[in-house]
Image (cartoon, one colour):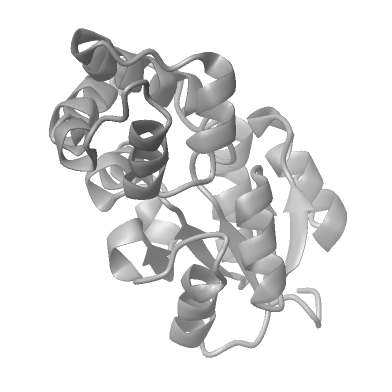
Length: 208
């Protein structure tokens, strides 16, 4: 095991799973009946890496005329339901990443998932992909009061693991800011299929 890195923490959306397109379609499905159009650009700027409540607040404020937060937030349970239904048939965590996680655990690394999404959305996928059994810590949006880009989510994970740093995999600017501010080393993920190679290269951990 690397002497300086004892834990690897993964963001979820856009890092373990290519789920951002599914989030986009789910939000469109619940917002359009209210006359609220969310373009892909708006989604990428205001939703990716941002906690859902804050993202909806920003969308409400820029509508013409402005919409109330409560009106738009009322769609969230339905959005979660649509997202879960779509993810049931959506490609899941790449096999290479699942193998990586098993190999990391076998090598003695502590593992965690730190996400701005809710446990309602993420937990079923962790179970379905056989990942939860390897995790030493999970931090969901409801577990903290200040969300990414604030470092609290990563600080909470580090505190649980009783560590001062970790290797973090993140795809969004806000997530990278949160992890860096918490004192972690960050690897940026552009494609979920690159995660295994990125981690193995950094930790000199290779399979057969």
